[in-house]
Image (cartoon, rainbow, N blue to C red; front, side, top):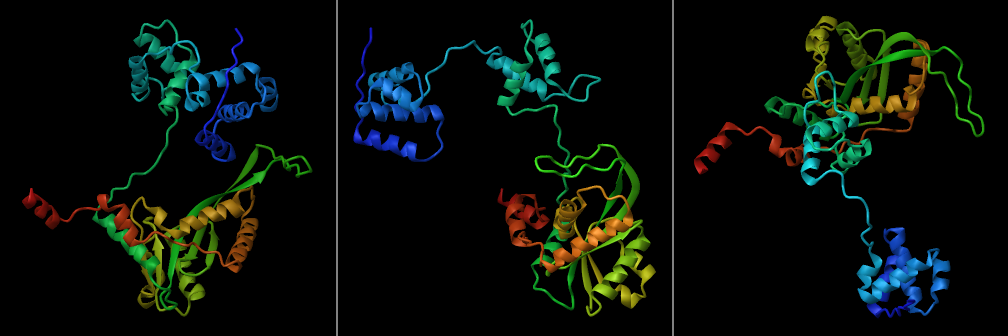
Length: 376
């Protein structure tokens, strides 16, 4: 029986449909249903609606029927679609998740989808499970047991907090030309040569280079960055011994900041970064022109120089450079351009923000613990 359904929208329903079509994020099928209902309300024939909205006649018919027999929400929403029952029950899915989060079998570094499918067959009554079934259930629970992420968990104790706040307070100070704050870090860099010459870029063709390369040794980069003004310097050395470190510090005070009464240097805890190295290279009065401020262990993010090294690698070193002299020229050009452009690190994290965001992790003084104990 060919039943014709007559659509009459209220003013509020028309307003809702027009608002849906004018903006916002909605599924394409839902928008098409809204267009069908508005056209049907205007008296447009079903065949014309199907042509203008680019749907089948059955879609127009179903949409109108669901509105007349139900309401606007029902007409716009998806009908439940028939399909096969889920292969895994709720308990079996929980078992899959628990298995994926457990230790992999002996001899395997991590769980794979194939291993999990086999294990579920062993643990349940299923004769077989497809790879896709396991993949979908894991994806729904946001589990990827074949992937791992390495990160360092710092121990936030009194020493950590003291060093962190010391560095943050330095960054927050107003610039003092006589007592500048300089961030220092170092990074090894490989010298990589080509075996076959790359094919240059052409219109419609990317540059192509051979995967084979020649390793020509490594060099070290000493990176200095002024925390309060747009200045940085990169020194290329063959090694990074305590002697090399002391020589760089001498150059920092004698060449880069000769008028400074004291240079305050922010650095990490490498074994060569010691005041003793300065006294071996300087006379005591000269050695005291440098004041070291160490970042906490596993907190190199507090060192602005590490950020600058990331910029250096992304802008200058992300390519094959085969010898030390060329590396020095390229870095010097990058350094001049970046200093001339006035580029600097704008540090936003302060001691106040650290106390607000990390307050729970701060160690609690013993006096506070005694007060809590008495209150309980």
